[in-house]
Amino acid sequence: MIRRMILPLLFGLIGAAILIALGVWQVQRLTWKEGILADIEARVVAPPVQLPEAPDPARDRYLPVTVAGRFTGEHIDVLTTRRDRGAGFRIVSAFETDEGRRILVDRGFLPDRDRGQTRRVVGAGVTGNLHWPDEVDSFTPRPDPVSGIWFARDLPQMAAALGTEAVLVVAATPTGDGIEPWPVGTEGIPNDHLGYAVTWFSLAAIWLGMTGLLLWRIRRRTE
View 1 (spheres, helix red, strand yellow):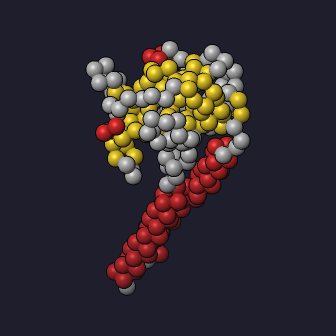
View 2 (cartoon, rainbow, N blue to C red):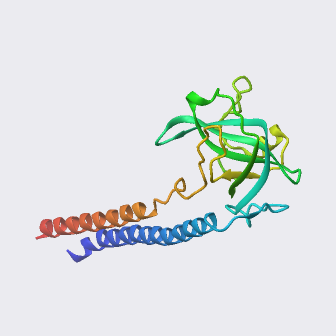
């Protein structure tokens, strides 16, 4: 009887060990992700500084900055949705600083119904965070030249289209024209590792339970 139970027992223990290891790995990933999110949140709320001469995506990501200058009137409307507001656009505008630099400012969210309204704000001081969005993949449509609608914030392409540096400041405070600021934060960064860990540990428990049931049936048949 014992000989007939060895193989199922080994199979059950090895399978459970693999599932438990996957659960432990997800717990470790959870700790790692929470550290990243805490670092981002700390960067976002730090006191703003002047715009660096040459912002670096690794060093200056989420860096709070303040810039003074004027909107040039050139803009890109990026199609998006907000869970609490529905369909609309992120308004990314060309901005000329008092020092003569041309950069991009993500002014925030504008509902679809308000897209056609005249935008009057020119002179402005902007406080926000440097950002390098990662929103483009092989499935992202190209911008529509007829409607002027973009489908992702493609920083190099937006900068080329508006003739600016590839520098994006996401406004944290209102910039006028009825555009609601949509500042950077951790809300859109997925952190599902706890759920994955619970799933793997649950599967391990089920696996052990099924193994125990199988061994019990083998014993019953043998007896």
